[in-house]
Length: 149
Image (cartoon, rainbow, N blue to C red; front, side, top):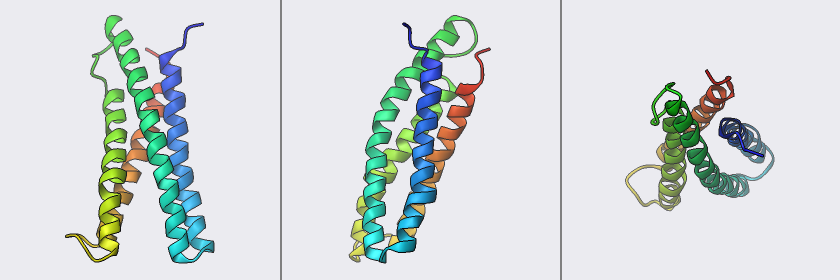
């Protein structure tokens, strides 16, 4: 049985986008609605950490799958091996790496009064990166779910 890389990539992108929407729009706000602020922040931080590591795994899978799709499309004369889908996966990966592994440690430092930027500014940057990642994945899933030309 041969795995269809387009279907696999569409499913993976949709699942990852669903995780992002679930954590960002449901779980984190719910934690802040019912828990003390410090506890809610710890719970939300833990959820975002889990999403970041899951996102790295999804990125690896998606990079492999969209490269296969692009290679197959290029061989059929329907595009380049450097596809928009590949760029969307790279955007999601960069947002994950920079947002979680770059900005999150700076947020911890800002909370204790260190660093150049305030906690609020860093939180805004982190939120923008998280939103951009979700948008890139929704677009990717939508593009891949369309039937091949």
